Image 1 (cartoon, rainbow, N blue to C red):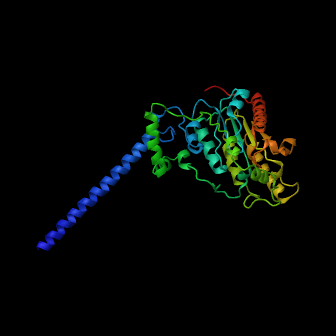
Image 2: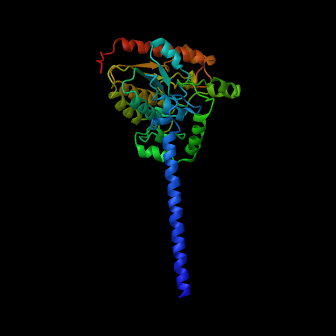
Image 3: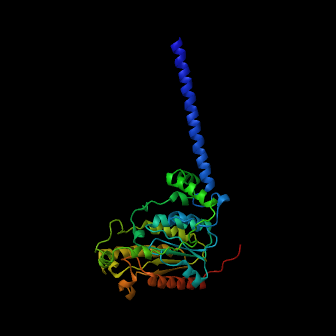
Length: 343
């Protein structure tokens, strides 16, 4: 009997300990989640209580959470590093539209469509959109896979997806970092318009390797998974553009590439690229107030190695010329924009 009573008492003790452990763990879990949601580590606007109205220094993948909803900007540039060097301030000066750069290096259509959706949720009647379409948009995969990690949860309209994203360890570190930044005497902030000059990054690279990579011609055949005939990214983009307000001008940019990146006329690669660009133009045509700036059109500038770092990243002189061409196209579209009645 004594042994049985001792066994029952031990079981009760362990049961009590288990309840205490589970309760404590649940309390800590819910407490952290509530704190993270309140702090809103990337200033997504889901918890405006601690919004500072500025961008804490961080990578563009998460900085776009604030930049994409900043009411100071009514025009956006979206893409990756192939449009990153276009200065939003230059576009603003030429058009009068306050532009923000939402380009994120090493992203493709899936990530860029997520950022476009985020910008449009916070700017349902934008003054202008500039969309950079490169080879990554030519994927055959309807899942639009991303090669680098990207916080889709941060830009998701689904609250549960956002809350699940807050449970990641790097995000927990950001919660602490943002709290320290908010209470700090001197807050270091990033440029609000998102411009980031990658030129200095290239300065430290081996010039001989850059020369070799720039001058090596592309193969005759199309890259695997980018030969068509279906281009699902174009279909998804077309659906977004069809829902835009009719008075919003949209410029689609095919970013410049060095001459060695242009396929030989008549080659399988050339046919695949032409089919992809045709699909993108068809998607753009679903929005009537639109135009294309074709930086890939063969011309003398694309044969000048002094204008390129490598085959697909151009220097400031070409970036400025491209920005001016985009601005002229936007101004032309705005001149024929339909009348937009007031609210």
